[in-house]
Structure formats: C-alpha cells, structure tokens
Length: 243
Image (cartoon, rainbow, N blue to C red; front, side, top):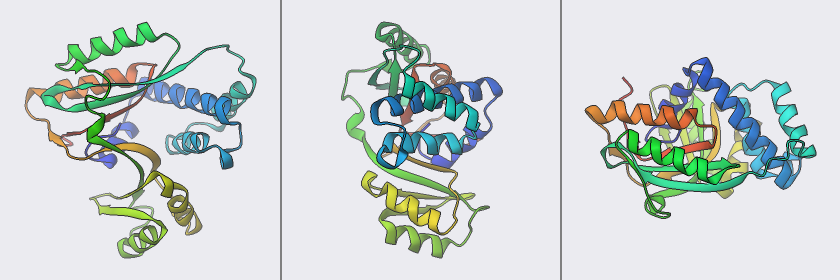
C-alpha cells in the first residue's frame, strides 16, 4: 500500500493476519514469474525482477517460494495469459486511488474492482482521472533500529542521488527519481544498511485527510483490495491517524 506514510503502511503489512500474508506471498510470486517471463532470470539486467525480489525479501518470502516462481517463469508451465493494466478511482472522502492489476480475466477484475469501490463509498473512474496527482519515485525505508545515524544516512543517500530525506518516529524515508534506484540501493548495501522497503512506487503530490466514518470505510476498502488476487499494488493520497 502507498499512502501518506510509507512506514505506517509497512507496519500495517507486518501486522497483517495469516490470510493476508498468504495473499501477499501469492501476489509477489506472480510478479516474480511475470518478471522472469518478460526479462529473464538475471536480476542484474531485469529491473522488474530486481524489484520483485526486493519486495519478496522485505516480506520474508521463503526462498523455496521464490525459486518456484522463477522456475515457473522460465518454463511458463501454467499457461496463464496475464494482462497488466491500471485502474483509477476515488475512495472515501474524495481520496485518489490507483491500482496496479495483473489478471487473466479482464471482465471479472473490472466487476470486482468496481464493486469494492462502490461498496465503501468510492467510485471507479476513467483512465487519467487521478494519475496526474502522482509521480513515480524510488522510495526506501530504513528502520532506526537498523541504522540511527540520521546525518550520516542523509549525506550518504543525497550523494547517491536521492531527492528527499524524511525522519519519522521509527524510520527514515528516502525518495528519489526511478533512475536513481540502483545507485541509492547500492550505496546503502555497500554500507551494510538494510532497508525495510525498497521499491519504485507512485507518490502523491498532496494528501487528503480521511476522518470520521470515512476512516473505517477506507480501511475496509484497502483490506478488500489486499484480498483480491488480481490487485498487485494500491496507491493512494489518503492520510489517516495510525490509531
């Protein structure tokens, strides 16, 4: 999930129940398989695979699962014909929502997504209705438990090409252009600094505060998207208090 606070969303993922964790494992495995089919099994020359493997590591996906996904991509054994697309819409409180979709049945997915939006006070929109509010960015999260020297970390990542550095309560958020992803990640790796998250994602220009009854509807909508096998990623410009 990608909203106002990457770290808040990562904590939400870490606290997810077993059913949601199973969904995350399935989705990341599918992403690895598709990445291998499209660009081969060497992450050095396959940025999409590199990102998928980074996501798998951040979510503690077992190596056996990763290897099976890679082998499935190399052999294309299941015969599935997956199609990639992006859906856009509006969530509770007028928030902007974008969905990365990977599906083998466009009609089923469109119906499911439309239903989820409408059930929780939102609406599915036309292509381009909210995407202009977002920019593709390389985003990294470093937990303060892993590295707590703020000045040293900020200097390191800015020299590596990062555009922004924010210190939150429990972690540091680092943002840069997608082309800087490799350089920033390499700089962190060379210093032995582990990331809680490292990805290229969609970051909103501005956020919308979700309050009152919209908070519960937003949470239920996000959970429903998490639970849908065809929804790979959810991006939003929502801002909610963690409690």
